[in-house]
Length: 56
Image (cartoon, rainbow, N blue to C red; front, side, top):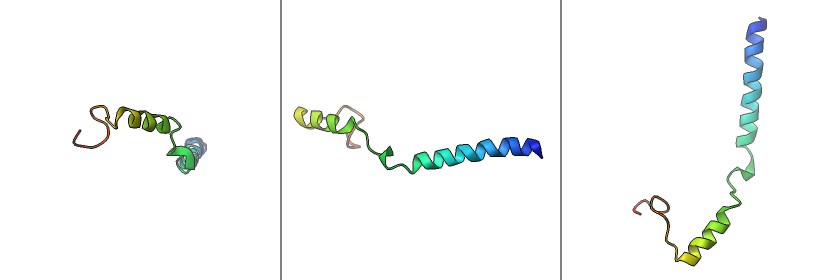
């Protein structure tokens, strides 16, 4: 019984931590992204190969 308890408790705690991290609103906000968008606008909107539209 003790062996199962010592395996299950850490996994449950890690699952709760991951769940809380994924639920954060700032997960999708990259503070560098506005700087990159303005730099691309100054360059004329050209992106590097492999970035942006799928046909680039």
